[in-house]
Amino acid sequence: MTRSTADTIVVGGGLIGCALAAELRERGQSVLVLERGEPGAEASSAAAGLLSPQSDARARDALFELGAESLALYPGWTARLSEETGVDCGFRRAGLLRCAFSETERESLAAAYGWQGAEGLGVELRSGEALERDRDELSLAPGVRAALLFADEAAVNPRALTRAAWLTAERRGAAVRAGVAVRRFVLERGRCVGVETDEGAFTAGAVVDAAGAWAAFDLGLPFPVPVRPVRGQIVALRVEGLVPARIVCSEDVYVLPRADGTVLIGSTLETVGFRKGSPREPSRGSSRAPSGSSRASRGRGSRTPGPGCGPARPTAGRSSASLRSRASSSRPGTSEAGSCSRRRPPGSSRT
Image (cartoon, rainbow, N blue to C red):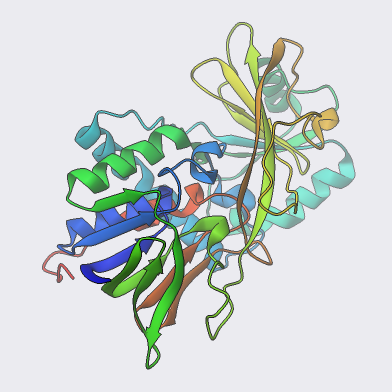
């Protein structure tokens, strides 16, 4: 049986899918979210929550612009979500220190990020006395020789954020259905008119593929969806005493402190399909962690498949008439999620 359902169907109930659903409802559209499992239970909730568009960017490209826009929208967006749901999304502008362990690495950092200073973006070379203060305050490893400070970089609690986006979508009137697997998109004369699921067919005026690592599920499409599953490994440690204030990273590993007294160390990228599991070894590169872990004890770890797009770029846009893709890069959609909340200009249409 075919059911006429909504103006827009969103396939995937992760952070991106729920954030889009909430925003579309705000614009007056009826929305149906179809999630194969539990909303937010995959990569969205397992992410570290880094919001680091500057540290990730080697050039001012479209990915940087998207991430920077998303970060700029995050404070207002998370405040609105918290106001509507009572869920603290854990947004904080902690700043990020990217470390170099040798003179060669310091020169590489200067070459890779010099364009940001030239364009007036917030980036500062830390060496000498400034670096020694950082070493004392952040327990930097003795091998750190220099660092770049990105003072505007931030972090969020992805599990809380995803729950807040899910609740907001439902409270604004979106229908979020868990345990419904979409099998294929229904195309007629080059236009996507709905989806087929294990519970029957649904029609809609537009369809968004926000299925994350599963975004390429329909192999019958007349075009490729360049997404594959990659698995990231993160270890959470319990720290004794004060937790460092800033995020610290190198080319190998990041150390992300959280307000609850834990520190996340990650992350690997493994191409192992959809296999999950608990990590049995420390994260790759942890032997050159830029911040010391002598005050830390082993905590929990996780391995969760997320979306990977070659070469590590998100896929977003129109694939055919009425079918739009919104899958993230080789990290969960946290970095770009703020862009889903882009405010309408005054007087613009609600559709």
